[in-house]
Length: 458
Image 1 (tube, rainbow, N blue to C red):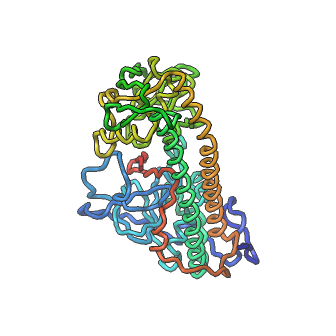
Image 2 (image 1 turned 180 degrees about the vertical axis):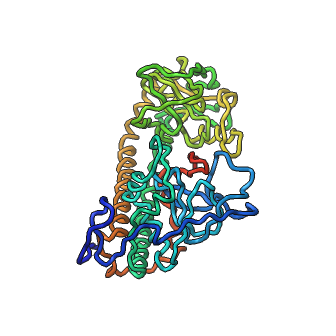
Image 3 (image 1 turned 120 degrees about the horizontal axis):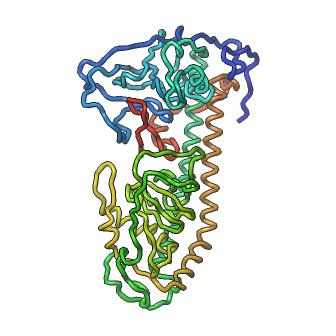
């Protein structure tokens, strides 16, 4: 499929856009929208949330973990077709066109099209969330720091907005829906491949750390149901006798130390990815030393297990475990990451919304292990067999990233008229067809809460 530009262009009203098709109108937003401030009398309407990733969606579909108001009386009403903007998070494109009747926070701006024939909802939702308009929101917002910029109604309504003819918007919508179907299908298949590769790696680890490398080794009963039979020369001890659970609390980190939170650790692999910016914290954290094993006890099914090579501090949701000699730190890390152990620990958690594991349970788990020399052989085997799998996973993840980048660029080019899709025939895409595929919103979706903070969404 080759996309071509429109025959003629004119200069756009915003510098980042450059030019738009000659026949596309462009006016200040106040000519297309009016601010609405209608309030709920009962608070019983459906509560809606705004995400910079998914736009406007029912709050019931999100896993909101932050504070919720006791009453929704006085919340702003919105209806299908209304544009909803979180005033404090517009700089992140936390806005979207609602497809629902419902209520939103008084901190949001609700803007209703003056003429419902001006915009196709799908087109408008994608247009106003592209990176170019996000840069415009930043320029027009006011505030003392970037994380607290506010896009007030007068600033938004004075912003130039393009408004292609309705039939072109519908052609763009049909094209983007068809492309989105292909994007989701591609990404879904890559995700499935990644999961299969991870399962293959887990099988290698599980086999190695529970039965060793010799397929002909004589076995004996471990005496523990979930462990089963083990090589007859292996020993079994409770975890609390194989490592120490350290709890050195501190409120500050020293120069050169690393700060690790749960979100910095990749599930199952243990890779640590730290942000470029310096992180600050205002609560007690735990100190760890190089080689200590960190085990995430919050939502243990995520398998946040890692072994930092430098000293630092970590959030309290990590157990800091230091091997005492019978098992090496490397072997301990692999044992704790094995799916059988993770599943067992996860079955012991308490708390429905944010399940946590308890050291009393974890520490009393019985672990089977061989001699130090055999542990080293097992670790070398795991590393060798996992290397090729890790490379394949990295390639698939990179392909997903590239596809997302291409999709973002394509949406921007199409909704701003940089390419002409009017003559491209695409199959009609029913909403049910799009819903068949998993929604591709990346690894996580942050819900912007009503007071300007961010709710974590699984």
